[in-house]
Every structure is written in C-alpha cells, then in structure tokens.
Amino acid sequence: MPPRIPMPGQRPKKVQPPTGGIPVPLERQIDFCRVFVDGKRQPGNVRMGHALEVVERYENAFVWLSLKEPSNEQMEKIAEIFDIEDLVVDDVVDAHQRPKIERHDEQLFMVVRSVSYRDDEEVADAREIISTGEVQMIVGEKFAITIRHGARLPDLTPKLEDEQELAVLGPTAVAWAVSDYLVDNYLKVTDLLEDDVDDLENEVFTPRRTINIDKIYTYKREILEMRHAIDPLAPALRNGLNNNKDLLRKALRTYFRDVQDNATIVSDRLSGFDERLTSLLDASVAKVTMQQNSDMRTISAVVGMAAVPTLVAGIYGMNFENMPELGWRYGYAAALLVMLAAISAMWWWFRKNHWL
Image (cartoon, rainbow, N blue to C red; front, side, top):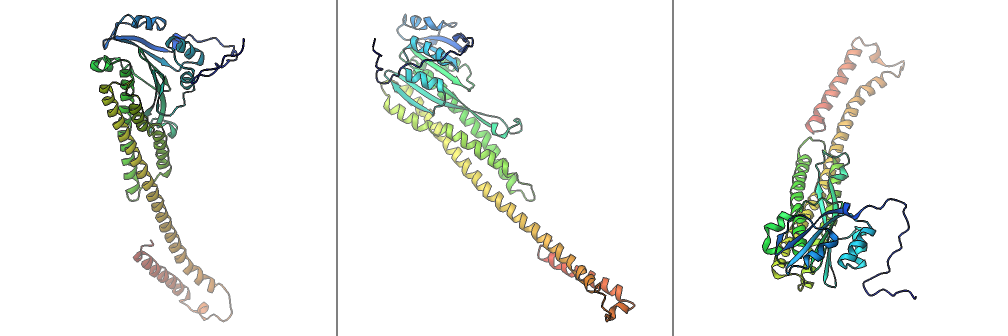
C-alpha cells in the first residue's frame, strides 16, 4: 500500500523508539475530568473515555479535562478521543511555547505562561526568585482541555461556578477562567517586585551604605525572564479576539479584553521596573566610583604626610662630614618638631579640603 500523504495541518506520526520503561497510566496525569451542564458543574468526575458521550446527552454541556505534563503517547490517546490535530499534540508535548492563540478548524489552542515569586531570602539560588511555567488550553465545541507544565494551577471550578452566566456560554469560559487567574497572579507578583525595587532604591541612595550591585543585576535578569513570559500575551489576546469572533461570544470577548488590559498593565509596570533598575545600576556604579576616588584621596593624603618624616630622616641619614645640625645640642628635638609641624599642617589642609 502506498504511504498516505498527510492532509494540510497534519504530519506523519512519529515512530517512537521503545524505551524499555514501564508505561505510565494516563489516569495519573489527569487532575480531574468534569462535566458542566447549563453552566452548572455535575457532581463527581467522569471517565475521560466516556466524557463526550455524557456531554452529547445534553443540549448545552461541555467537559473540562485537566492534565499535568502528559507524554507523547498519552497525548495521542487524548487526541484520538477529542479529535485534536497532530500539530497541537506536538506543541503540547514540547511545552516551550510563547503565549499565543491559534485556530485549528473549530478548535482554539491557547498558551499562557505562569509566573511564581519567592523571596530572595527563601531561595539558595538567586535565579529562582522568579520561576515560570506554561499552561496550555485546547477548546473545542464540547470540551476544554487544560495542560500545565511546571505550573501550579488550583482547582478553578468554584471560580467558574461563581460566573455561571459565563459558564453557560460554553468551554471558552474555561479558557477565560484560567487566563484570568494567571494574569491576576501577574499583578500580585509585580506588587512584590515593586517592594523589592523600592528596597533596592533605598539601599543605593542611603549614605554610607554598602551597595550590592550583584543583587541589582539579579533582579534585572529575573524581570527580563518575566517580561519574556508576559509581554507577548497582550498582542496574542488582541489578535485572537479579533480573528475568532465566531468562536468567542460577545460577553466572553468583553471579559477577555479585561484580561488583555491587565496583561498590558503588567507589561508596562515591568518595563518601568527595568528602567528603574538600569538607573540604579548607573547610580551604583557612580557611587562606587566616587567612593573609590575618596579612598584614593585618603590614601594619597596619608602617603603625603608619611613622606615628610621620611624626607627629613633621609636627609640627616646621609652621614656627610659637614652637617652642622648633627652636632647641635637641640638638633634631634628640632628635627622631630619640624616633622610634627609639617604633618600637622598637611593634616589640617587635607581635612579642610575633605581629603580626610
């Protein structure tokens, strides 16, 4: 039989080499599988294989399947049940995606990055202050699948139940609930980062306080990582809302625009933090340079005062035969007095000019 030519948007399935390991049951990667009817969650969980059969019994119902880091084999099983394209399966398994919204026939594939914060005193490695993950969402006519990679995502079912007027609009409400939670968490993280940046400013501009420039560089790097995770989200939401109006109800588009606005606010705040940290670096370098110049003046003043007794001692240590002061009764006391007077005069002059 000749090889089958893949249709547009599809690819030939990869042949996975045998790993020799014990296959992990798909059920272990499932957080929950729940059915919503007319915006209300039905009691208990349903088996994933029968979820769509249960949903088909109702006119307005959908299933919400939540997964954690499925393997390629596990995701292919899910794709067979929910008729998901191979390209989406690849993106789900790779899990290194920028925030985006893609359309595949009548399905939407959405990626939103997660961000978590830990205080720098709580972590051994300063690079772990900001950690990012990834949450992917596949939304079809009768289902919503959320997949998390390195991200903490609480059970958002109560949030969806509280917004029943949105849940009744279908599975796209799940995408809104998840993205709204993640973006709200962005705002919380930026509030914590703002406190840290304020502390750094106080540290830099407090007189006679040691400056930790490495700490400023660390926060600048962490904010850069956060910007890479967040900045593409607002444009992706804008384009996704404009290009998929037939799949997103008008009421939901309004709520998604609120998420987009919050994502834009976070991006603007992070840009401001980045500029403030750049200014702090410049101020820190200037302050360190001034401190080094002050130290050099102090060292020069001390060396200058030490040069006077060294000069006098060197002159009278030459042992020439004709040196009248060597035979003078008060020569030793006079030499000491001259050295002390010269040192005192230099000390007064250096103090007057703030060298000491």
